[in-house]
Length: 588
Image (cartoon, rainbow, N blue to C red; front, side, top):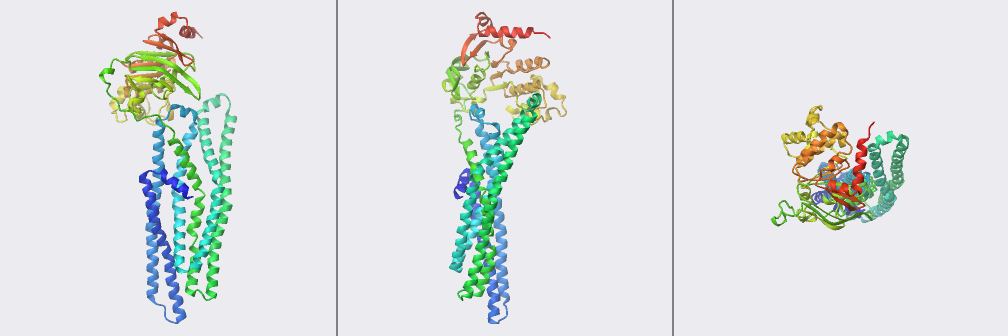
């Protein structure tokens, strides 16, 4: 138990760790104030019983003393409980908020291969359900478990000064209670891991179902997919019920032990009184205290079963944060040394890369001069997109080097490197935000005039202006409320706003209908003016005018040159051209 709490404390950042530490210190004072209730009861009972035995009138000052002690206990308890609750809530929720941000920042610098190996549901679950559980459970568990232990421990210590025999009885009850509590924590140890696993599986299956709903409908898979989703939801429900069913019996035994400990305290006190070794007033005080002694401990003990959830949640979050990120601590290079100005803008030297032991890029060397257009073509799965990702350091090469302006890309800080690249992908992702904010993504503080200017260059000002709220129209997540061509043009406007010297077009026109193609090509032409362009394309007219054409097949450069020269070679490129011409000649 203490190991889990220490683990959580280490997980917190320094500021929130101080809040938890402060809350524990204030919690000690809270326990002292709670213990004063026993003193108030003792003063009152001794006064009443003493006056009755001696036949004297009950003194008013005894009432006022007891009342004063009780007021100090209640007021002090309220203040300290409020402080501890506030600090623990702030520490718990801010820790989880900060860790979400830290995980998001860390994910930015992980190789893209990580996201291929791990499901979206797993990542989403850690940043949502898991961190939410840690925030909720940690705040309550730390508060209740620690406070229960503090309250009970302090009362036991005070009892040793009052009557060591009663203190030993209570200490024995405390030991039995903790022994049973250990069984509760062990009972939920495995099921807690199952709960976290099922949380991730449920989120993953829900996301898969929603994202693939078009395919599900098109192929009449609604029954099958619904059944799979229902099975995952049902499994998570059974896991949650199983967790509760494991906790309830042990929790009841734990509660019984607490109550029996109080009963033992009462019986022992009465025995000592009847044996003449304990005063009547002290016996009456012990009888009253037996009802309040284990209240805090019992509440904390029930929450301690949830500590395992904290442990697993912290472990999963820490696992993501400990994943080896790409080396991003390079130099913030903005100016190119004069001796490197004659170097190619981008150069790959004998680059190799493997994914899951499967070689994707195998010894590619390529120079790309500034302000030129390089078209990359080749069979599907040949490594075209992977090679472009290596140039822009979405992945790190396994062997060889990639240079930007004569400097190894690993010597740049990641942020400095990314200022040199803009991307337009085949599948555009737009955020659930206004169109204006999606366009100014590369320049968050850009004025509206620049946003509109970029939109006009990207040929999307006209259709944006027709939307209900113009540039302030909020589009659906992923841009689902726009057509493919409209999304592409907004992504081009975003790239124009970023104004990077290198543009990478990954089959940007592959899925565009003829009505949008003209506007899209005009937008691309505006984007690529006086830029270095690297394009992955399958359309003949976007390839034939490139300054150099590179054919990549099976991870190697199979052919390289200009359009006319490659056509004469009668190789892969020539067959590619013939197939494009044949496709264009088809008529309905």
